[in-house]
Image (cartoon, rainbow, N blue to C red; front, side, top):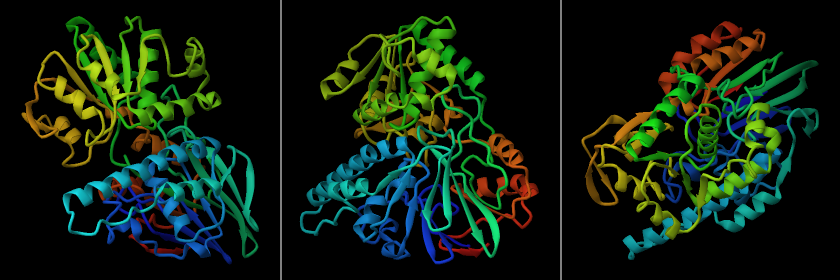
Length: 461
């Protein structure tokens, strides 16, 4: 096998890994890089392989850094099947139609700001998304599927988000049976909502994520206690809690955690408002896959008419619904996107709560440098929101343990359960510091030196 890493190398975006097994070419993921997607010279338009020469595409899960260029791949000539889990297939259409809409708006704004300069074309449009959806082939967890002659795909539950999967490929090469495993993004253990990541044994070649390879996150039990204290404070002060959260995964996890808190920890329920049209559509998909959740989570959510819903949870649709929240009295909780506070309705809610010391802002997602969310996390004195400056007086709590990514301890646990004796190991999807810290953790389970690939670097394994 020859493997070439075309993304997520010493960074956390742009997942794309090309496998060549005999005459067959298989692409794992085709995600967006964290750069301007309408930039004609940008990284997202660079496909260093011929899409028409691919035999299959295998997707680990539906976050944009793993699926965000699939319509572009189809636009450039890929005509084969794209393998997904059923839930990932359902989510892909919603996420990528939204991405096409955002690109169209970016092009419009570029034309308004620079009317004398020809506006760039979007990376893809809605029609490309529809063509891409036609190529989706759904494969359930634990079902083995021959995707090219002699290569069998098995998806294992990764416990990261709904539909997330560990990719297992079994094949024969030079008379030897071999097993290749790509972790995708592994979830955390014992998070109550989703199962723990599935253990895979007899691995010959492992490509592992490393997002939190240098970090130990708080366990779920401690996070629940912290959230309990924050909500109790809001009840006592009759104040508001604002939670910036990504529409896919984090929003649904926070709604569930609050439901669990009110159901099992003797805390009086207060109104929860989910203010994100995209999150609302994605929550509908979550309701259609009840088997994805732990027995504990199903038992708790079965108490309400619909999953991720209760008499105190309201999903806002219109701008009028959103604006109305600014005039309601606390205690209440607003969950809104985007997770880094750089766009969407969250900015409107933040500007209404940020200066009042009774209010709270709860950060539950990774915050990139120079984002509004990062400034809130760092505790700056003043923040600029929607072209106005505000004093940051609200209490800011950072609960990054709610991340859907395995931390250093979770990754070490998963490696240990494989049984060791892995022939080749590679680390992707992490910052250099995280990868370098995780390599010694993985190394005892790998015969050859663990590799941290460079962009477009190839290995014969």
